Amino acid sequence: MGRVDGKVAIITGGASGFGAATAQLFANEGASVVVTDKNVKDGARVADEIGAAANFLELDVTKAEDWDRVVKDTMDRHGKIDILMNNAGVYGTGAPQDIETISLEEWRFVNDINLDGVFLGCRATIPAMAKSGGGSIINISSTAGIRGTAPLVAYGASKGAVRQLTKSVAQHCGRKGYKIRCNSIHPGMVRTPLGNDVLKLRWGDEEAGAAERLKAVPMGELGTVEDIAYATLFLASDESRHVSGTELLVEGGMLTGG
Image 1: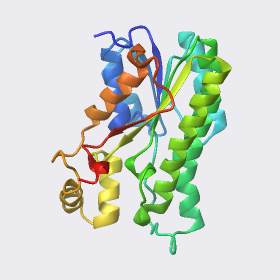
Image 2: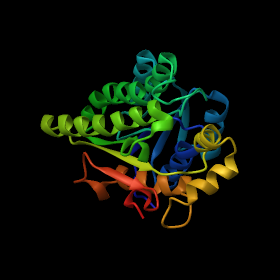
Image 3: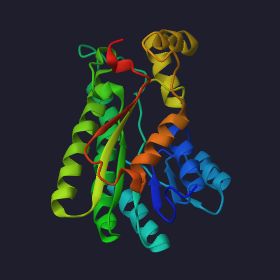
C-alpha cells in the first residue's frame, strides 16, 4: 500500500482496459485519480466504483480545449498534477491498413488519437506538472511501436511515433529542470476491448486470433490489464525516480525472437 500515496493522477482512456485497471490500482496505492474518457457512461462508472479517491472528467484527447479544461479542473480541485497516463488509443475503424490500400482518412483517424492525443496531453500537462514540483508521464505505446506492422501500418506508425515523442519529452523536461520523467510502456497482446478489436481485424475471430498470437509469446500466456497497471505503477512511483526516456516492454518475451 501507499506506493503513490498523496499523488494526483490523470488517466486517459479510463473507461476500460488498461486505464480502468490502473485507476483502481493507483487509488488502492493512495493516489487521487482523475478518470477521463469520451465514454461518459463507463468512465463515470469506473470512477464511482473506485469511490472517493476518483472523479470523472469527459475528455476527447484530440481536442486541445478539452485538455486545457481537464488540466485546469484538476489543478483547481487538487492543486497539483503528479502523474499523467496517456492511455487512450485505437487500432482503427476496421478498414484495410496495408500501405497500398489504406485511406488517408484511416491514417489520419488513427494518428489523430494515438499520436496527436499524446502530444496534446504532454503539452497541456507539462506546465502544470512542473509547477507542481515534477512528476511522471507514462505513454502507452505497443510492441507495434518497435517492430514492423505491415497489416496495421497506421497503428504501428502511431505507436512508433509515441515511442520517439516520449524520449524527446523526457530530454526536454530533464534539460529544463522540471523534474518530470517520461517513459513509454509497450504491451504485447492483452485481451482488452482494444486488443480484441485487432484480433478480429487481423484474423476475423477473436479466439482464433488469440490462439495465433499466443504462439509468438515465449512465456506461453497472454498479458493481463493488471500486468500493464503494475508496470505503470512502477513508473509513476518514486521507485523509478531516475528512470526517464526509456521503454518498458510488457509482452512475455515476444520481441526476443524466441
